[in-house]
Image (cartoon, rainbow, N blue to C red; front, side, top):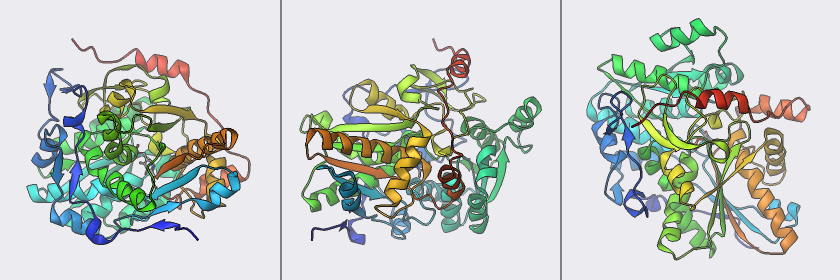
Amino acid sequence: MENNTFVLSEKEIPTHWYNILPDLPEPLPPELHPGTKEPTILPPPLFSAAINDQEFSPENWIEIPDEVRDAYRLWRPTTLYRAYRLEKLLDTPARIYYKYEGSSPPGSHKPNTAVAQAYYGKKQGVKRLATETGAGQWGSSLAFACMLFGLECKVYMVNVSYHQKPYRRIMMETWGAQCIPSPSPDTDFGQKMLAEDPKSPGSLGIAISEAIEDAFKRDDTLYSIGSVANHVLLHQTVIGQEARKQMEMAGVYPDIIVGCVGGGSNFAGMFLPFVKDKIEGTKPDLRIICAEPTSCPTLTKGPYTWDFGDVAGMAPILKMYTLGHGFIPPPVHAGGLRYHGMAPIVCHLYKLGLVEARAVPQLATFEAGVTFARTEGIISAPETNHAIRVTIDEALKCRQSGEAKTILLAHSGHGHFDMAAYDSYLSGKLQDYDYPEAKVKEALASLPEVP
Ligand SMILES: *Cc1c(COP(=O)(O)O)cnc(C)c1O
């Protein structure tokens, strides 16, 4: 029998994060100050000095502090699997590998950056971190990280998910954090949103605005972000570095890499150490496919332009594919993919033609997720199901063409707190949402004016 798992030892946890910025064929557009609209780094009271330095670092390799590597040892290196059972069911000549990030204590890739951000906050001497969360994976990851480094943690959780996924809140509370639904009465911006719509389902953009306001108002608090920012993608590159070694152990190099994108961090963490080969020209045929929901199709339908990272316009203005910072996506179960924009690094690479994107509807993603659970056993997060859908579609194309392609799937996390969503799929109640064209048009009418 051939190997099913590819396991690295603790000693092989990466010692450095890989920074793509110096390797880009064209420089990344700057981030603009939300007020002056001049190029800026993130406003200083928000992030620690170390994180600010990392956001636009010219260094290719940034050393991972020992304390962070020590925290990584709780779940890293993560396992790479060969999906034999899925391949067999699909009757495909394709070879499917997946790197599973669901084995971290919070159950996703997100603690890869959370522990780094908590460590730098502690080092800077603050007492508390504030953040937003969509489906709750980021909030629980930061709660876990703050627990490890002895910090308080306040989480603004998107209202619709707060009620759909109560166990994520309890998880945060178990690790000692405070979690409230957003929009909340705890911030001026939350109060304003509640006055406009007391039943607002909330959005990641609104919750970001609340967490930023919280951090701005208090000296003892820094803001933490779970995706989109360059430093978050940087921290996630431990995934791709490990995967490269594990694919070498398996004796293969991927033809196609697939992942889901909300803000773009888990998938960029996987593909950045590989896209380097494409930029350098050693692997010109490598395909990198970003999977996103048809109901929030940032890359496949949005224009590439300047927009705020949040709804209130307090976060930096970023050059990105966007559906408009005021866009509130339909309440699909993949809460982590309900974001109006996308990481500038992912957008830049998409613009340059180095990565592709594909939108998939909700029902088809759950069908794929159930197929994965009934072959590989793992019950995946609704976000991850988007990537599984595209992986299965590519494997089925191989069945048609007879090509034995090697597919590498970035598996971002488990779905153990998403059983209500599976229940609704299995009982035939889950629905598809059309692309909300009119709402996007409306949101795109209020983009910031940039000289
Ligand atoms: C948050 C999350 C995502 C989406 O965020 P990215 O920054 O795009 O990675 C995807 N999958 C899981 C399991 C998540 O928790």
